[in-house]
Length: 160
Image 1: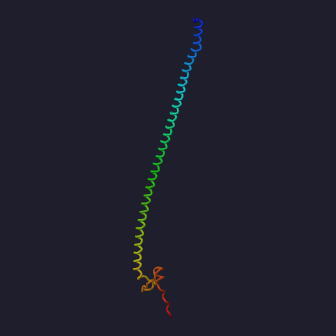
Image 2 (image 1 turned 90 degrees about the vertical axis):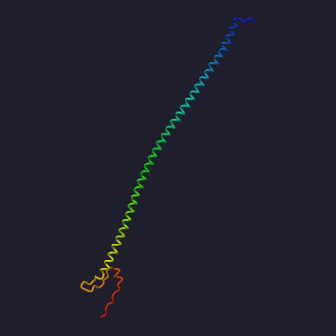
Image 3 (image 1 turned 60 degrees about the vertical axis):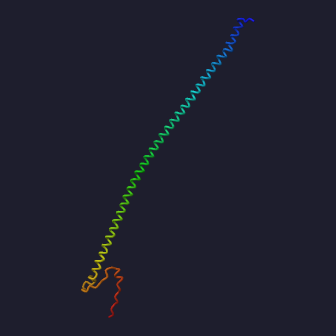
């Protein structure tokens, strides 16, 4: 069995054309699949990285919002504290004024009671020297107040 040159060329053509080409095609497809897989992996990694970046940006914005809100609440709290302190001081001043007003009122009332008692004693001392008849020298007692006039018995008319 001699193999002729034509058979060898045909066999080589078959191997190189069919089997060899298939081998090179298979290797090329394998490399292409690996490259596509790497490309898909890179795209997925990039999407994941973009997602992380977006999450970080959202978290940062949320943190800034919360810090601003906290600062606003602090300033509002401080405003209410100062307002409360001012109102406390005002209430204390008003309480002090009311206390002084009551104290002064009580002192004035006591002073007026003393003066009234003093005047009553004076009037009581003057009663014996008062007379309703200005021509009379006997100084008959006359009623000074309405109460005293109501208490004094009416004199019976003299029969003629």
